[in-house]
Amino acid sequence: MKTEQNLRLGIILMTLTSLVFALQDGISRHLGGQYSVYMIVMVRFWFFAAFVVALAARQPGGIRAAVHTHFPKIQILRGLLLAAEICVMVVAFVKLGLVESHAVFTCYPLLVAALSGPVLGEKVGWRRWTAIGIGFLGVLIILQPGYAVFSPAALIPLASAFMFALYGLLTRYVARKDAASVTFFWAGVTGAVVMTPLGLWHWMPMTGQDWIWMGILCCTAATAHFMMIRALELAEASAVQPFAYLQLAFVAILGVTFFGETLRPNVVAGAVLVVAAGLFTLWRARVNRQGVPAP
Image 1 (cartoon, rainbow, N blue to C red):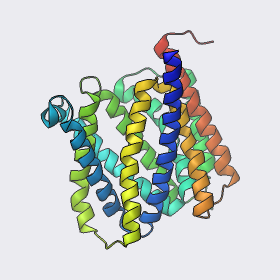
Image 2: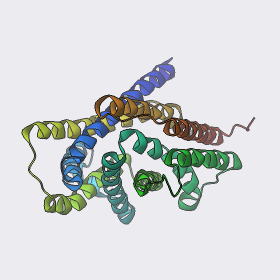
Image 3: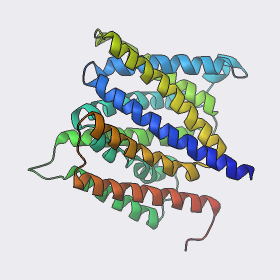
């Protein structure tokens, strides 16, 4: 009964996390259209870094324990990847809009599956390779590659998805020896350090109203990460991760309602293929972990 209650609460928290992340993306799209992306991401990482430092100070061993890592170079690389990925994705929101950017970005679990072999040495079977291929067919449907219609800007969210997938794989790699609190600490602090000179160089005066939006963006970032961590503590990732795809639906509602975006048929069709392929890879990963023979 307790396991069932934990699963239910985990699903609720992951759904709320998806909603908060979607709201963050909407705010980022608004601010990114008015101000320097570097400045916006810098302020976000300032708050993120303050949050992880305060969190580490309350843990056993304090800051000294959070700093200690078995993989300093990889932890720094993770922080750089996360900062770059957020910058690139905000640019994608401004150039392409929320709906199309997220429709492409949703392929990142497929990239994780495809890269898990060369990065982590994991075996990817033919079923998951088939799902990966179908998922990228969905991406091609969204992008509509062709001389007459393809826009190079469509590659921006794809680059962001690649960086986020690599970030996730490196997170799994360092988890072999580093605690989650250590990994969380390095991501926030590294991102703040690398974004500060870029953000200050591109500093722009911000209106009082937009500072309020900036504050909401920072607060919701901490809230969303906390809820996601709590959801993954309560239930298996394979059980709650599918609900992260609800972010695409929430983003579509925001894009259409507040930013005047449209749901083009090719984007909807491609997104359905990408999500279906991603859900299948999650299911196959769960089956392989449990050692259940494939039907």
